[in-house]
Length: 364
Image (cartoon, rainbow, N blue to C red; front, side, top):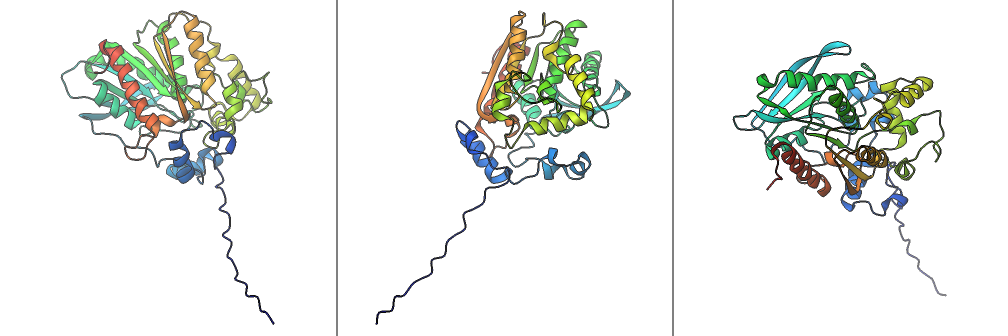
């Protein structure tokens, strides 16, 4: 009699993909560095837009992708100042980064991202510090008031008040009031675009408007509209509306808090107020020189580039650079050991253009 011996073979369970793992359809062309970072450190997170604003504020770091971010290098001097604002009346904080030297210095005002709801003076501190050191200019980071406590349009007018206060206090700040630039990321890019119109209309000379992945036309975010070619002209929205790091639902969450939760009110603001939707501005003539930065894998990519085309068609000096393979907030992922190469390139590029507009020469 023959006895056949069998050996049980343990079958390893197939690993389950994380909840926010990158879908296969998005992998082609995506920066391998970003894929590795996100899959390892981001794909299991809970995003801010997936919880209430009250829950987010209890522990912001819990709902933020901070692994590849960096606090930034040391600078010669950092000072926080309280300044008055008017819509409504109150005070906000600005943080002034000063390089070594005698001055008076050129100055760049930065307006952080975060959908007008999130963010603070730590959000882009690393970039501000790099610009201060590398471009040898003062950098003023503006802590405008956030929604929902201070809804639209408070953040816009806080930011513009900061620009005007800076000019009025040029001697105190040891800056050159004839060498001012403004800029910001995402919501900050949106507000910088709006303020460039304010500056033209109030005869404030700006050296540059630096619009970084700016939100310039968010009408496609309306919840009472179906997303289709008739309601949205931007291909990037159709390509990346479900990207796990920044889907359309995240944009709608921001607008819910900034504009209010009423669909009719949102529609009225988005379709009638150009300061909310800058592509609707009544005139694009005689605006400050602009440099627009977009990210390939960002649903806001095409609206930013379209806004640049509108300015260029009106006769303004406009340059646009699209960073390939990266998501919306790629510029913030600048940790020296585990950041993105494209983020380091972005730091060098923005330093070069700020030096050029303020000193008339490119970085050596």
